[in-house]
Amino acid sequence: MAIAKEAAVAEWGALFGTVREQVARKKFAAVPLATAATCLILLFSIVQHLPGGEHFVTRIGVVKAALPLDVSLLRTPLSLYVPALDLPVWGALAQVFVVFGIAEIVLGRRLTLVVAYTCTLAGTLFARVGVAIGPDHVFGFPKWVAHVRDTGPSAAVVALAICIAFRCRAWFTAGLVVATMVGEAIVLPNLAGMEHVVAVMAALLIAVSVEVFGDFWPRVLAGVGAAAVVSTATASLEAAAADVRRRAPAGAAVP
Image (cartoon, rainbow, N blue to C red; front, top):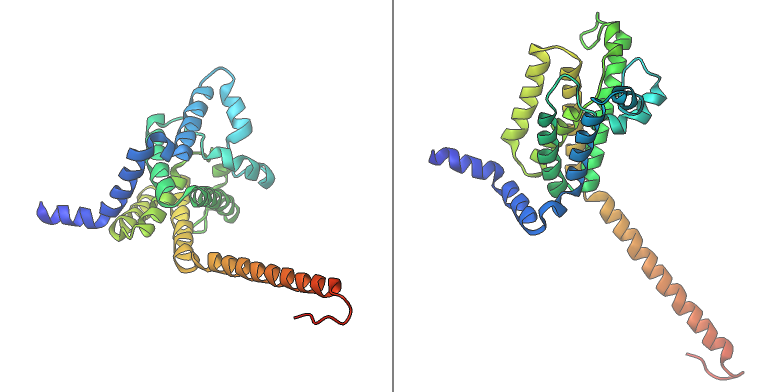
Protein backbone atom coordinates (compact mmCIF):
# COMPACT_ATOMS: atom_id res chain seq x y z
CA MET A 1 0.00 0.00 0.00
CA ALA A 2 2.85 2.37 0.83
CA ILE A 3 4.44 1.74 -2.57
CA ALA A 4 1.12 2.26 -4.32
CA LYS A 5 0.58 5.52 -2.44
CA GLU A 6 4.03 6.78 -3.38
CA ALA A 7 3.41 5.86 -7.00
CA ALA A 8 0.04 7.66 -7.00
CA VAL A 9 1.59 10.77 -5.45
CA ALA A 10 4.41 10.74 -7.99
CA GLU A 11 1.93 10.31 -10.86
CA TRP A 12 -0.89 12.65 -9.82
CA GLY A 13 0.34 14.60 -6.81
CA ALA A 14 1.23 17.81 -8.65
CA LEU A 15 -1.94 17.64 -10.75
CA PHE A 16 -4.17 17.07 -7.73
CA GLY A 17 -2.56 19.93 -5.82
CA THR A 18 -2.96 22.39 -8.69
CA VAL A 19 -6.58 21.49 -9.35
CA ARG A 20 -7.54 21.48 -5.66
CA GLU A 21 -5.99 24.92 -5.11
CA GLN A 22 -7.82 26.50 -8.04
CA VAL A 23 -11.18 24.91 -7.24
CA ALA A 24 -10.92 25.76 -3.53
CA ARG A 25 -10.11 29.37 -4.33
CA LYS A 26 -12.49 30.06 -7.24
CA LYS A 27 -15.10 27.26 -7.07
CA PHE A 28 -16.99 27.03 -10.41
CA ALA A 29 -15.35 30.24 -11.59
CA ALA A 30 -12.17 28.17 -12.05
CA VAL A 31 -13.80 26.06 -14.79
CA PRO A 32 -16.26 28.19 -16.79
CA LEU A 33 -15.44 26.36 -20.03
CA ALA A 34 -16.09 22.93 -18.51
CA THR A 35 -19.30 24.18 -16.91
CA ALA A 36 -20.56 25.65 -20.20
CA ALA A 37 -19.67 22.48 -22.13
CA THR A 38 -21.48 20.30 -19.59
CA CYS A 39 -24.57 22.50 -19.74
CA LEU A 40 -24.56 22.35 -23.56
CA ILE A 41 -24.45 18.55 -23.52
CA LEU A 42 -27.33 18.45 -21.03
CA LEU A 43 -29.30 20.94 -23.13
CA PHE A 44 -28.83 18.96 -26.36
CA SER A 45 -29.72 15.74 -24.56
CA ILE A 46 -33.01 17.23 -23.37
CA VAL A 47 -33.87 18.90 -26.68
CA GLN A 48 -33.23 15.84 -28.86
CA HIS A 49 -35.69 13.79 -26.78
CA LEU A 50 -38.48 16.36 -27.20
CA PRO A 51 -41.01 16.12 -30.04
CA GLY A 52 -39.24 17.42 -33.14
CA GLY A 53 -36.10 17.99 -31.12
CA GLU A 54 -34.07 15.23 -32.73
CA HIS A 55 -34.62 16.76 -36.18
CA PHE A 56 -33.54 20.18 -34.89
CA VAL A 57 -30.38 18.83 -33.24
CA THR A 58 -29.59 16.80 -36.35
CA ARG A 59 -29.82 19.90 -38.53
CA ILE A 60 -27.37 21.93 -36.45
CA GLY A 61 -25.01 19.48 -34.75
CA VAL A 62 -25.05 15.96 -36.17
CA VAL A 63 -22.15 14.99 -38.46
CA LYS A 64 -22.09 12.05 -40.86
CA ALA A 65 -19.48 11.07 -43.40
CA ALA A 66 -22.17 11.13 -46.10
CA LEU A 67 -22.71 14.86 -45.64
CA PRO A 68 -20.92 17.42 -47.83
CA LEU A 69 -17.61 18.46 -46.35
CA ASP A 70 -18.59 22.10 -45.81
CA VAL A 71 -21.71 21.05 -43.88
CA SER A 72 -19.65 18.69 -41.71
CA LEU A 73 -17.12 21.41 -40.96
CA LEU A 74 -19.86 23.84 -39.96
CA ARG A 75 -21.52 21.30 -37.66
CA THR A 76 -18.36 19.88 -36.08
CA PRO A 77 -18.03 22.49 -33.29
CA LEU A 78 -21.53 21.72 -32.02
CA SER A 79 -21.28 17.98 -32.71
CA LEU A 80 -18.84 17.75 -29.81
CA TYR A 81 -21.71 18.57 -27.44
CA VAL A 82 -24.37 16.29 -28.97
CA PRO A 83 -24.45 13.06 -26.91
CA ALA A 84 -25.21 9.66 -28.38
CA LEU A 85 -28.87 8.67 -28.33
CA ASP A 86 -28.21 5.12 -27.14
CA LEU A 87 -25.81 5.91 -24.26
CA PRO A 88 -26.59 7.35 -20.81
CA VAL A 89 -26.01 11.08 -20.87
CA TRP A 90 -24.65 11.16 -17.31
CA GLY A 91 -21.49 9.43 -18.55
CA ALA A 92 -20.80 12.18 -21.07
CA LEU A 93 -21.63 14.87 -18.50
CA ALA A 94 -19.22 13.44 -15.93
CA GLN A 95 -16.42 12.94 -18.46
CA VAL A 96 -16.68 16.42 -19.88
CA PHE A 97 -16.96 18.24 -16.56
CA VAL A 98 -14.02 16.41 -14.97
CA VAL A 99 -11.63 16.20 -17.93
CA PHE A 100 -12.48 19.59 -19.43
CA GLY A 101 -12.24 21.14 -15.96
CA ILE A 102 -8.81 19.67 -15.28
CA ALA A 103 -7.63 20.64 -18.77
CA GLU A 104 -8.91 24.18 -18.34
CA ILE A 105 -6.85 24.57 -15.17
CA VAL A 106 -3.73 22.74 -16.32
CA LEU A 107 -3.59 23.60 -20.04
CA GLY A 108 -5.51 26.85 -20.13
CA ARG A 109 -8.79 27.58 -21.93
CA ARG A 110 -7.29 28.35 -25.32
CA LEU A 111 -5.22 25.17 -25.57
CA THR A 112 -8.14 23.14 -24.19
CA LEU A 113 -10.37 24.36 -27.01
CA VAL A 114 -7.64 23.82 -29.62
CA VAL A 115 -7.06 20.22 -28.52
CA ALA A 116 -10.77 19.39 -28.20
CA TYR A 117 -11.79 20.75 -31.59
CA THR A 118 -8.68 19.69 -33.50
CA CYS A 119 -8.92 16.08 -32.35
CA THR A 120 -12.68 15.95 -32.89
CA LEU A 121 -12.19 17.30 -36.41
CA ALA A 122 -9.40 14.77 -37.03
CA GLY A 123 -11.78 11.94 -36.19
CA THR A 124 -14.52 13.40 -38.37
CA LEU A 125 -12.20 13.69 -41.37
CA PHE A 126 -10.81 10.20 -40.77
CA ALA A 127 -14.34 8.76 -41.01
CA ARG A 128 -14.71 10.29 -44.47
CA VAL A 129 -11.33 8.89 -45.57
CA GLY A 130 -12.17 5.45 -44.17
CA VAL A 131 -15.43 5.29 -46.11
CA ALA A 132 -13.71 6.51 -49.26
CA ILE A 133 -10.99 3.82 -49.23
CA GLY A 134 -13.48 1.06 -48.46
CA PRO A 135 -13.55 -2.05 -46.26
CA ASP A 136 -10.73 -3.79 -48.12
CA HIS A 137 -8.23 -1.46 -46.47
CA VAL A 138 -7.17 -2.03 -42.87
CA PHE A 139 -8.35 1.48 -41.95
CA GLY A 140 -11.39 1.44 -44.22
CA PHE A 141 -15.10 1.19 -43.54
CA PRO A 142 -18.08 -0.16 -45.47
CA LYS A 143 -20.28 2.36 -47.24
CA TRP A 144 -23.08 2.18 -44.67
CA VAL A 145 -20.79 3.76 -42.05
CA ALA A 146 -21.14 7.02 -43.98
CA HIS A 147 -24.66 7.30 -42.58
CA VAL A 148 -23.70 6.58 -38.95
CA ARG A 149 -24.23 9.49 -36.57
CA ASP A 150 -20.77 10.77 -35.58
CA THR A 151 -21.17 12.98 -32.51
CA GLY A 152 -20.17 13.20 -28.88
CA PRO A 153 -17.30 14.44 -26.71
CA SER A 154 -15.43 11.14 -26.28
CA ALA A 155 -12.65 11.91 -28.79
CA ALA A 156 -12.07 15.31 -27.21
CA VAL A 157 -12.01 13.78 -23.71
CA VAL A 158 -9.44 11.17 -24.74
CA ALA A 159 -7.25 13.79 -26.44
CA LEU A 160 -7.38 16.14 -23.45
CA ALA A 161 -6.46 13.30 -21.10
CA ILE A 162 -3.33 12.67 -23.18
CA CYS A 163 -2.32 16.34 -23.17
CA ILE A 164 -2.94 16.67 -19.42
CA ALA A 165 -0.79 13.61 -18.75
CA PHE A 166 2.02 15.05 -20.87
CA ARG A 167 1.85 18.44 -19.15
CA CYS A 168 1.94 16.83 -15.69
CA ARG A 169 4.51 14.19 -16.66
CA ALA A 170 2.04 11.43 -15.76
CA TRP A 171 3.59 8.97 -18.17
CA PHE A 172 1.87 5.86 -16.80
CA THR A 173 -1.52 7.53 -17.25
CA ALA A 174 -0.68 8.59 -20.80
CA GLY A 175 0.47 5.08 -21.67
CA LEU A 176 -2.64 3.57 -20.10
CA VAL A 177 -4.95 5.82 -22.11
CA VAL A 178 -3.12 5.02 -25.36
CA ALA A 179 -3.14 1.26 -24.65
CA THR A 180 -6.83 1.35 -23.74
CA MET A 181 -7.84 3.16 -26.92
CA VAL A 182 -5.75 0.89 -29.14
CA GLY A 183 -7.14 -2.17 -27.36
CA GLU A 184 -10.69 -0.88 -27.84
CA ALA A 185 -10.09 -0.45 -31.57
CA ILE A 186 -8.70 -3.98 -31.86
CA VAL A 187 -11.33 -5.76 -29.74
CA LEU A 188 -14.30 -3.69 -30.98
CA PRO A 189 -13.40 -2.49 -34.48
CA ASN A 190 -15.91 0.25 -35.20
CA LEU A 191 -16.02 3.92 -36.16
CA ALA A 192 -15.89 5.23 -32.59
CA GLY A 193 -12.92 3.08 -31.66
CA MET A 194 -10.89 4.12 -34.70
CA GLU A 195 -11.74 7.77 -34.16
CA HIS A 196 -10.46 7.48 -30.59
CA VAL A 197 -7.14 6.16 -31.91
CA VAL A 198 -6.98 9.07 -34.38
CA ALA A 199 -7.73 11.48 -31.54
CA VAL A 200 -4.91 9.93 -29.52
CA MET A 201 -2.47 10.36 -32.42
CA ALA A 202 -3.51 13.99 -32.95
CA ALA A 203 -3.25 14.70 -29.22
CA LEU A 204 0.25 13.19 -29.09
CA LEU A 205 1.34 15.44 -31.95
CA ILE A 206 -0.09 18.50 -30.22
CA ALA A 207 1.43 17.56 -26.84
CA VAL A 208 4.88 16.97 -28.34
CA SER A 209 4.66 20.20 -30.37
CA VAL A 210 3.75 22.19 -27.28
CA GLU A 211 6.62 20.61 -25.34
CA VAL A 212 9.14 21.35 -28.10
CA PHE A 213 7.90 24.68 -29.46
CA GLY A 214 5.74 25.96 -26.62
CA ASP A 215 8.16 28.72 -25.60
CA PHE A 216 9.40 29.51 -29.11
CA TRP A 217 6.72 31.87 -30.35
CA PRO A 218 6.32 33.71 -27.03
CA ARG A 219 10.07 34.42 -27.16
CA VAL A 220 9.81 35.58 -30.77
CA LEU A 221 6.87 37.85 -29.98
CA ALA A 222 8.64 39.22 -26.92
CA GLY A 223 11.69 39.96 -29.06
CA VAL A 224 9.56 41.67 -31.69
CA GLY A 225 7.86 43.71 -28.98
CA ALA A 226 11.16 44.76 -27.45
CA ALA A 227 12.53 45.71 -30.88
CA ALA A 228 9.42 47.77 -31.57
CA VAL A 229 9.78 49.62 -28.24
CA VAL A 230 13.46 50.38 -28.93
CA SER A 231 12.64 51.51 -32.47
CA THR A 232 9.85 53.79 -31.23
CA ALA A 233 12.06 55.27 -28.51
CA THR A 234 14.88 55.89 -30.99
CA ALA A 235 12.52 57.58 -33.44
CA SER A 236 11.13 59.79 -30.65
CA LEU A 237 14.64 60.86 -29.59
CA GLU A 238 15.62 61.67 -33.17
CA ALA A 239 12.43 63.69 -33.68
CA ALA A 240 13.08 65.61 -30.44
CA ALA A 241 16.67 66.35 -31.46
CA ALA A 242 15.55 67.57 -34.88
CA ASP A 243 12.96 69.84 -33.25
CA VAL A 244 15.60 71.34 -30.96
CA ARG A 245 17.93 72.02 -33.89
CA ARG A 246 15.12 73.62 -35.85
CA ARG A 247 14.18 75.99 -33.02
CA ALA A 248 17.73 76.96 -32.09
CA PRO A 249 18.85 80.52 -33.19
CA ALA A 250 21.10 80.73 -36.22
CA GLY A 251 24.72 80.23 -35.32
CA ALA A 252 23.94 78.79 -31.85
CA ALA A 253 25.69 75.62 -30.88
CA VAL A 254 23.27 72.70 -30.65
CA PRO A 255 24.48 69.52 -28.85
